Amino acid sequence: MTEPESNVQKTDEKRSEKLNTDIIKMKKEHISAVSAIEAEVFSVPWSYQAFENTLSMEEALFYVAVSEGKVTGYCGLYLAADQGEITNVASAPEYRRQNIAQKLLHTVMTKAHQQGAQRIFLEVRSQNDPAVSLYQKTGFQTVGRRKNYYQYPQDDALVMMYEYADI
Image (cartoon, rainbow, N blue to C red; front, side):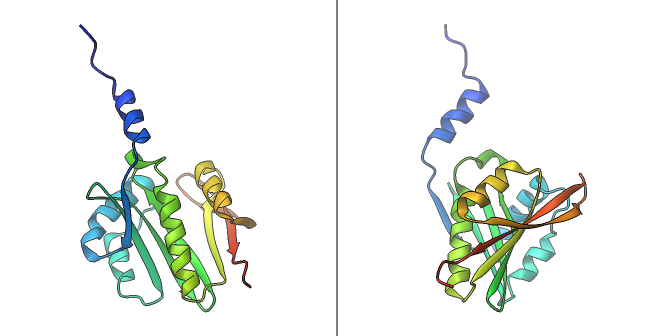
């Protein structure tokens, strides 16, 4: 008789499968799922209302990743003049390491550039190595540090910038 598979094996097998993910503009029906991911991932999460408010803002670009019919991540960016600022990027913990954040980031950055953004900025916890690595792979460079910017737990923010080559 064989022993049942462990949850770790099942998770690893799921990660090795190709996940079919669509990146689409965030709509009101996505906000509950986005808010749930936000609350699970961030120590000081945005509210449902904050996400809802972005939907009516012309200068806001918010996209979601939908995998297997479920919202698995999201990314937001605000545009101002020729610059963009990434507000948040997150993948649901059970869907990490599936390139969801990378796909979201690429989509939002492309849309921002199409709308005139020449530089994109973001802040990230200095100790969030996976996020810093993702941003560096995407072409962001650290241009500053904000001391004690984050609370719960306290951490510095790295200010990172992406500059389009066509400037």
